Length: 190
Image (cartoon, rainbow, N blue to C red; front, side, top):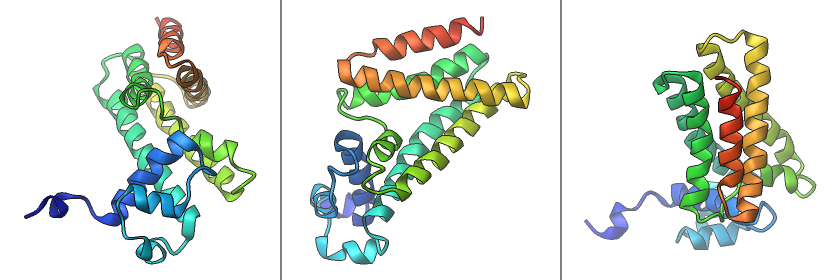
């Protein structure tokens, strides 16, 4: 078995590369050929792998990234002993993304919204995926006794605060905005 055999399939590498590249460059800063080259994938197979073109790759990339965040939110929902601990776990998932990437990776959903004029269907897709994330966070609040309406409102606060703090953290190359957001969100629950 060679190192080539150990790698994930070309299609999966392309989706992973697209997710990373969009986080760093935005939607309009990434083309299919760049994705294929970055993933060391066969350029000639792009149409076969992604008959929906760039939009299909982008949507699969954002779903891949959301699965990572969903894992953090699920862990917060199941592993946290308290709501403040759960909220800290949710914020920490973003902190890890920024630190692992040395502050070069942002939010794919934000990239979709910023570049929506170039690829308008992506704006609606971003909204749907923000709603899914909000629902997951609301479930965490429900687990700790919040009613449906209050949990939904708190989830909007958490998602919005994290998104804003992640953007400011990336710009300043510091986790301070996320640290402060975490502290304020957690302190108000005490």
